[in-house]
Image (tube, rainbow, N blue to C red; front, side, top):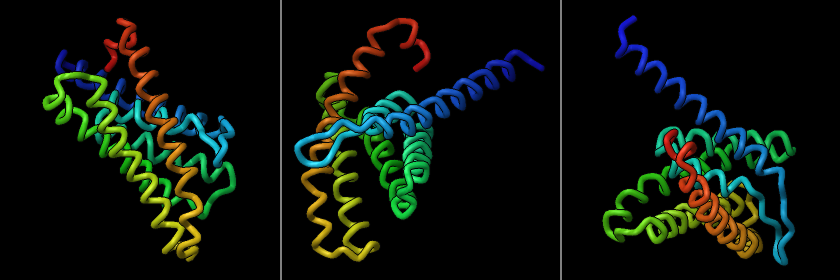
Length: 177
């Protein structure tokens, strides 16, 4: 085995391990529910966004989709698992693709992360509304979940921005991303 193959295999192994780690964090974080005045907030969205920014579009979206859908299945929300797989994957995909573009425009890390997270979480709010109104046939009754999902999105955006700043401040952690 040449040194190029070793480096390539180590990089692929590291990427696979980090993707699995974030899928597990998303899944486990979804179980940590914080009650809010309207609905609840879970830590899963924080890890969806952090995974998007740290792992990139393919691996970040994969971790978000698998971890979130698995949590739905484990918690008994099987009817939501297919939608969650697509919606959470799209959140991570949007946030990870928009971040570098916004970073070039904004020239600052925090506004670029905030804007990319807002775009991603807008997909979540709209995606669940669409799924509930059309596929679960709730019609306009699905609008009842909009305030709770929006509040969950805001908490996820704030939490992810705080967590990624903490992680990137640590040199040991930063070298893996």
